[in-house]
Length: 125
Image: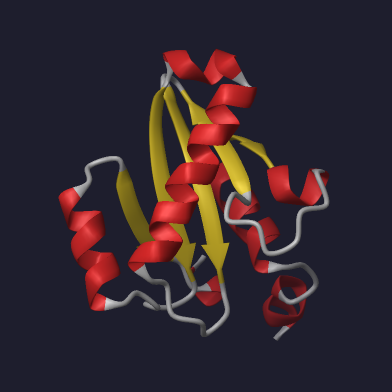
């Protein structure tokens, strides 16, 4: 029960950040630092030559193909603003507390090797 209380003391994005820090990723809590609400780019992570753009979702709203395209566009704008990231392998990852993807969104992820998703329940870690 203590673990459940501990988990709910911070938002899902912070939970994901902590999880990946434990896997030796460098994590920038971008949307939190910039005070961006409902922004598709929540976290920027680095490990070796990979940069992961992370969108965290713990709500029940469906993730559509249009959401993924917007996520890619925001990531491309981010790379233009922070040009040092151009030399890295950029990957886009949607991390959700449950499967919230439309069929078209899953097909789009399957067709694009730079896109992926992970289901990460707060209780699994």
